[in-house]
Image 1 (cartoon, rainbow, N blue to C red):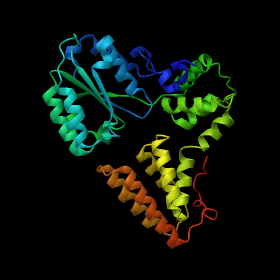
Image 2 (cartoon, rainbow, N blue to C red; image 1 turned 120 degrees about the vertical axis):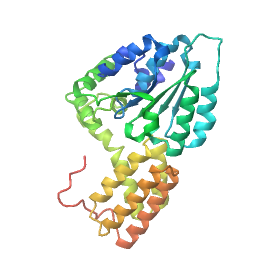
Image 3 (tube, one colour; image 1 turned 180 degrees about the vertical axis):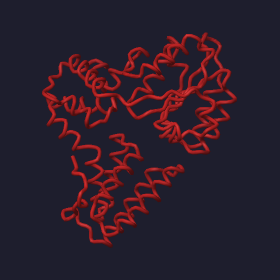
Image 4 (cartoon, rainbow, N blue to C red; image 1 turned 90 degrees about the vertical axis):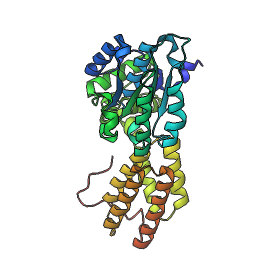
Amino acid sequence: MSEAENLMWVEKYRPQNLEDVVNQQASVQRLIQLAKKPQDMPHLLFAGPPGTGKTTAALCLARRILGDYWRNFILDLNASDERGIDMVRQRVKTFARYVDRRVEVPFRIIILDEADEMTSAAQTALRRVIEDSSRICRFILIANYSSGIIEPIQSRCAIFHFSRLGVEDVVQRLEEICKKENVKVGGEALKTIFDLTGGDMRHALNLLQAVSMGGEVTADGVRKAIGLSGKARVKDVIAKALEGNFSEARNELVELINVYGMPEKDFLKHSSEELLNLNLPSVGEVAEVLAKYDYRLAVGARAEVQLAALLAELGRIGKETGFKAETAKPKSGAAPKR
């Protein structure tokens, strides 16, 4: 089996040229014009929902500007993995200050994905690096929310807003990939994938590939696959924590984050939805606990440790209230779970 066949579809079918980025025409056209005069290109900030092509556009722009040498002259980091000041001082600053005149490239490029997850201290340090290295380096910051980037950095960047993809764009792209992979699709399966992923192309592709492993892609198969992941898994973790099964709950938490790649903030968001939907007598205390850990994550505390502590607190609350998963019911009028 070739290396291409082993790739996840989200990487195998990632666009290589700016013109192929789906449904971001305004941003793409601006980037194409910038690439014609790279020496005039400012630092960039790409903002928008997950799975809308921000990282892909950054990589395509790097290829266009740096040509055959692009792999050697870019540093691509996920800032949510290493979001503290040490990452800026040790990795970003070292790469940004290095000058290599052996190859004629206009500058080096540093791509910081999920930059809005960086701590305030790290962003302040980054601001100085951006200022000091602008002669030989350009930064492309990628964020879900531009408001998560401090104002002094925003003011030094040209901001590009990426919009959520529409149903026609997502379904058309999935149809193209199904034809290339010889995948049979039935009924409203691709529309169902869009409905369940909300315009996130990366999530849609991952879901399509997962469902295709079972043969024909059907709407029922898509619903079953989505039920085995995401919110359903978080619901199971919360139930185990409330019942006092801390070790099992923590193991599933670690698996969700490290194996399935669920962002810590998404885990907390889904946990909040699940907990506030349960008919718990101590809902006020639960809300206070959720707010406490949301704040701790926002200020840069170690996510895995904080979420484990959250599970421990839920165990205490569950014990005090006599929680039992089999008897717990959603609040009256709550939306039914998919």
